[in-house]
Length: 182
Image (cartoon, rainbow, N blue to C red; front, side, top):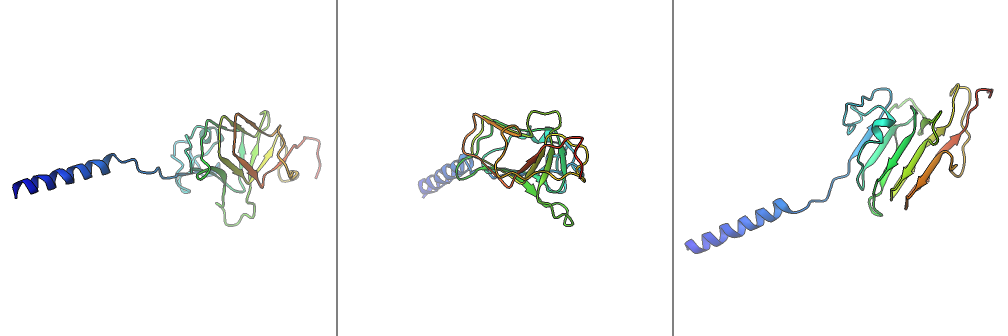
């Protein structure tokens, strides 16, 4: 009988050790960006405590299945660089928007890339899905001048290098000059 107890304890120890060291699948994380209520000291993993800037957003180490979500109807200044991100075919990295303001009917986030070469740049990355962005290269009055919706993305606004298996959907882009009138 003592041998049986010892064997049972040994078996349980092996099973518990195996469970402790087994690699569990990583859980995808949603990151939120909101220039109005965000703070770059936040982790950004909650709609109630989002990060604020594109600069902070580009420093997040996104993993396969993660989402980087921007508050729709909001305006962001600068350029979003997505560098060395590796999604997978079954777990792409999603960069898109979320509805923050129930009063807003705009599902897009606006990136004003004035003085930048690109609004969104994807470098050395794979399996990304990017959607719901309006990219403007210069701006004087967003209220007076609507962006031009394009069926394909201009390479001067969104650039990709050493990137594979990604898609753009429902994106718009436009160039606004200071002499334009509504």
